[in-house]
Length: 285
Image (cartoon, rainbow, N blue to C red; front, side):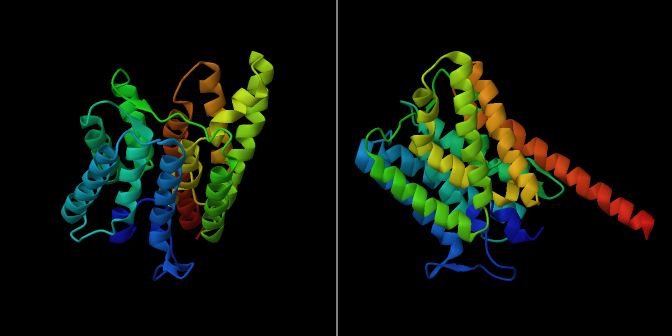
């Protein structure tokens, strides 16, 4: 894995071999940060979803500073900051706390996970997912996660989904998002049948802005997904399945925990299978 690959870790790092692609006439690495900023603006103007601008800016600044320092220490050069910006703004959007320290800690955990929790040269967790999941688990009395739907404002959701779908389609990750979304709906109806809840209540969470970040950035992270298209679809399905199980057990932050559990497990299994195939190929040769 190249040094630049170590220093980046999200959709923002996608590009052609030997250089980044252009998308809408813009370097593809910077399209996701623009898109996630659009999600923030639409959500804030429609619902005022941010805890505060100061806390969001604090999370972004912390993530960028941590990326600069750790990138310089571990890689020996200044990293591209698009990934850090995505992690920071995700923390600012998704974390809810009256205190300021959770935003600093969560952003630090997210960026540090890329450099510390590694196996065979790859980090195992999506940075934002790791930071938010760890904080929600360890400091649940102080920290919560954003939980808001678009309500009757259908247009913002359509705009975000349309743009997000175009972006992940262009970078060949749409099958992951589509598999997860279809699986979510199927499992939502199964949950409604099992619990007796209205199906609308089970489907409603996916209309929230937090799910837009989840399906377009977290589960599609190229640095923490398996290599094959079939494997990626299977992992997306598995994440939705584990999420359903967690929801049936009243786990509030089921989607974050589901990806936290399934993603690294699948990645480690994929790396083990690749290693085994290489050894078999050498033995046959």
